[in-house]
Image (cartoon, rainbow, N blue to C red; front, side):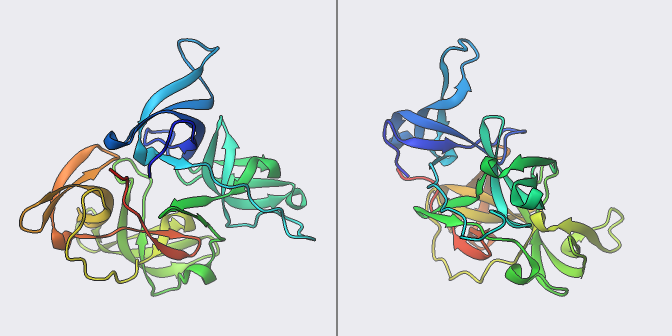
Length: 288
C-alpha cells in the first residue's frame, strides 16, 4: 500500500520482544518506489532528545493504516469481550496482540494471554480493542476462537506453529489425536522424535493451531513481492518472492532471519491467513 506524508499509521517490528506490537505514528516522508517511509511516533520519544518524538525510516511491510474505532457494545451486554476472543491490549506505548483468557469483575476487567511471550496480564476494558487485520485493503475482524468455529476435532488434519527461536513464521502439518478444554494433543506428519523411531507428538494450545489451508487454485506463476508459503525443513514458512528466475524457480526472502533461499514452483503455495474463523488470501506485500 502507498502512504502519503501526514497519514496516520501503525508500525510493527520483527525485533525480539516487539513481535505482536503496533505503535501509533504518522508518515513524515514517503519514498514509495523504495518501499520505505519515515515515520514519527506518537508516544515514543527520542533517545538523544527526550523532548522530541522518535523518528525512524521503516519498510512498508511494517506499516498499516490506523484501524477504525470499534462499534459500541450491544445493548444489555454484560461484557465487551468473550473468553477466547482475539484482542489488542494497550501496554508500554503499543497495542499488543493477545487472546482473552478470563473475564473478571463482570466484564470490567480481563485477563489476556500474549502468544509471543506466553505472559498473562490483567487489563481494564478501556485498555482493550477488538483485534483487526488489514487484508487486501480492508479491515477484517477476528472473531472468537473455539472448537465449533475452527472445526478442530480429533482426527482433523491441522497446522501447528511454534514460538521457539528459529521457528517463527513456520507451520507444520499434524493430526489431532486428543483434546481437552484448553489444549490439543497432536501427531506431526513429518517431524520425528530425536531417535527417529516414531512421529513426534506434542501438546499445543489454541493459539498455535489452525485448520489446514484450503486447496488453492493452480498458479501458473508467482509474482514479484507476492507473499507465499515455502516448504522447507518439513514445514511451511511464510516469505516474500524477491526474485523471479527462469525455469519456474524463485528466490524467497524470509524476514525473521533476513535470508533468501531458492525454491522450485512446486515448493511454494499462496499464503493465506486464518482470521476470524475463516481463510483470507494475503495481498502482495507492497506496491512499487
